[in-house]
Length: 481
Image (cartoon, rainbow, N blue to C red; front, top):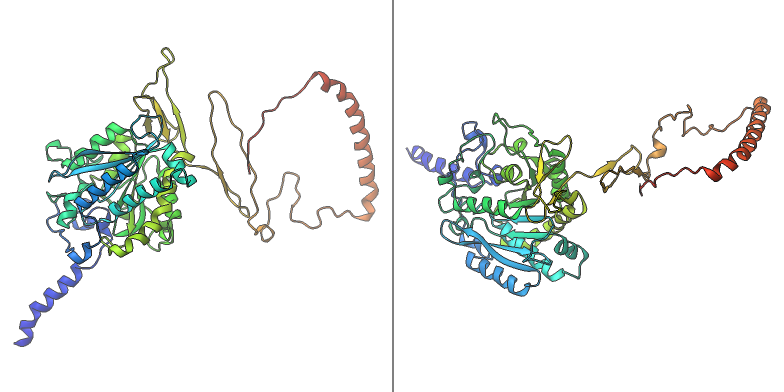
């Protein structure tokens, strides 16, 4: 009798133990797709997703009011390189504050624009804290650190520390309507979010913002895993598999820039190189990442920057340091790579908002309305050879001019252990008997060399006069060393 009374209590404790375990699948956008009827987490309502965030866990994090104060304090302290503005309000009417950082923050320029978004999910607050640290680092190091100066003077950086301030206050994943904002965007495969009347105000604010600012690239910061995620996030048949977008190679490069610059993201045992295709990890639909790429021409990554969704505040300085160079290098890569230019009308000479495409990639980038400027991210050119260190470089293409590019690769120390390929003359370059001549045939080689030398002298005299009137011009070949 006593045992039967204990059974319900034991089952309840066991259920609580399992539900309290952290799940990485919830980091990017909700429950595992297998739990959603095979439709990759279509549901935007998260009535069952209310994690218990205690006051002890929240201690040390800025409240919404404190974050708002910190943003305006930053704007006052760093007014020479920043402006503060709002893109809208949350369900509970809290302003969605943005910090713009640039050497000309109140002016339109023909420069690439990048946005960072934090706190997309209310129970993932690490991004809002890290982004404020990024803003302050750039302000403190401008004109002191070369990387900070490069970013401030060549990019218009926009930082939205908290997309979901209501969810943060409520200590749950969704917004005040308990809607997962990373399921609320229009989807390329399914029309579940096409009803504008049901779209959340935070989502509308982001969509209007993207259409207004013409961002080149962006990243949203999440918690619950340690990986750089790139499109596509879903598949047409809702299957879980690798599903690359037209710019798959470029996105992999961007994700690798972040992962390789991170303290330990690239060492992940779960994700090779610390990066993953979203649909290969687990499909989601209505995500912000894919919508940015399709409708905004904006190359967006979803960055999971903390294994724990809500780590202790004491860990925030370490998390910031682990991600600092990743964030800075991702921004710098926007300047140091890609193709940048402007589009003009031939008849008026005025800039026009045309578009740019790269052959072989079914995706176009539109130019800005004001300056007709475009910024096309491209994967770097890389030369490689077994036994040598790989080398990459950038090329500048001018109108009606081709560029020849030579690479000089450095040995990696393993050349002597490998057999080099045979050259066009049939010799093996690693053969120590390459110039060995048998004694009985020495006279033949000497006679041949004498004849060749005589012919060389005769032709040299004959060609000397011709070279005075006929010169061959050859374009200088750029060499990557």
